[in-house]
Image 1 (tube, rainbow over the protein chains, first blue to last red):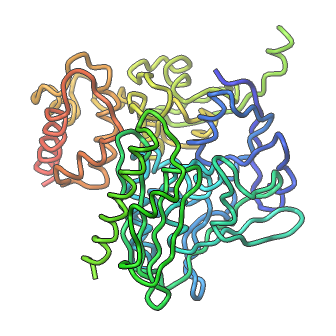
Image 2 (image 1 turned 180 degrees about the horizontal axis):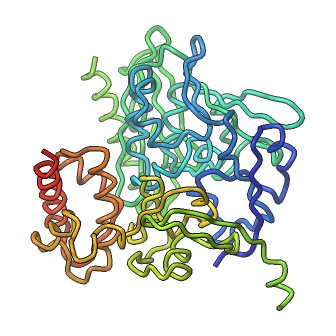
Amino acid sequence: MLPPFTIERPTGLSDALGLLGEDSVPYWGGTELLLAMKMGLLRPRSLIDLKGLAELTGVRRDGDQLVLGAGATHDDLARSPLVRELCPLLADMEGRVGNARVRAQGSIGGNLCFAEPRSDVATVLQALDASVRLASARGERVLPVAGFVQGAYWTARAEDEVVVDIRVPLPAPRGVYLKFQITERPTVAVAAVDRGAAGVRVVVGAVGEVFHSVDAASAADLDGDEIAAAIEPVPDTTGSVRYKRHVTSVHVRRALDALEGAR
Amino acid sequence: MSEAAASEPFSKVTACVNGVQVSRAVPSRTMLSSFVRDDLDLKGTKVSCELQVCGACTVLVDGRPVSSCTYLAADVDGRDVQTVEGLGRGQELHPLQSAFVDNFALQCGFCTPGFLMMAKSLLERNDDPTEEEVKHYLEGNLCRCTGYEPIVHAVLDAARRMRETAR
């Protein structure tokens, strides 16, 4: 059983911001937080349940941005007609996160905030050049995903901040998301996008502590072995450093082939 | 009452469980699996991995499947909960249950309540899934004895039976 804690249920963003602090943590689906608490890694005094905040829900288009409420669940996003139309790569990835229960329960914002190195969400959002909007009683700020995710289980979010939404620039690039997975999280994940005049971006997730992002003028300028060599894989039960470099190289090549093939 | 018990924070939970309105005050840290099994004595829901990986503890909250082992009971306040006990009507089995029997889709039966609830939520959103769609949706449920083929066949069979009845 978990150690005791209280649950607070603010109904507006400003009330919620007043409650957050060192031992009072944001809570949405719990798919990451409750597991971390079960493992004894976190022992908050209070869960600040944000599910009553309208500011954190829904998906909408705002000019040249697709705005994803931090509380949108993976399943919401996979099935959203707007996301499927404007950013099919994101919808495809969200439909394959974890399992169907995690997708029904877990939110995109929560996933990003835990900065699990094998997060499908972070890898694809980096490929899409997305940014993260944070709010606290001190004000608001917007960070690129690459600036938000700082390390394994480590983000730029301060204890008194919440992620309000995630913004994907439109038009979203055409792309593919490929992963190799034998447990509930990927061993290697590769997002490859064609950014038109800006060239091609490849993002490798799950292998190192943070995703590895490479831009090039064209797919021909990218080499799977080179990209794999630049990553410091984390060895675990799904493979050694040498093995992970190998599967990385193979999957980068396959992702680039798929990107070319889909042209 | 011990000091620890006196400081235990509680949450009020009023929910509709299998069509019955229930109201309890539970320690805020109570998981939904303990709530249904221990507070409501609905032991059909099984607990195994406690990591949202195996699916044995699946119940539906407002029709969506959740791992009740990693879902706070406090979060079902004001919601609808369905457990495996709510599937059949008295002695009459739900078409999914009949299809599991007819297709030999269980052996020890420990994973079955979870598979049944997952399958129910799948068929509610898609009454005619392909074999691939069934496999993708049930990917997060583990069975260690029967093998998965009879389970996939049972779900497809149940979908067919339910479409025929609905016609």
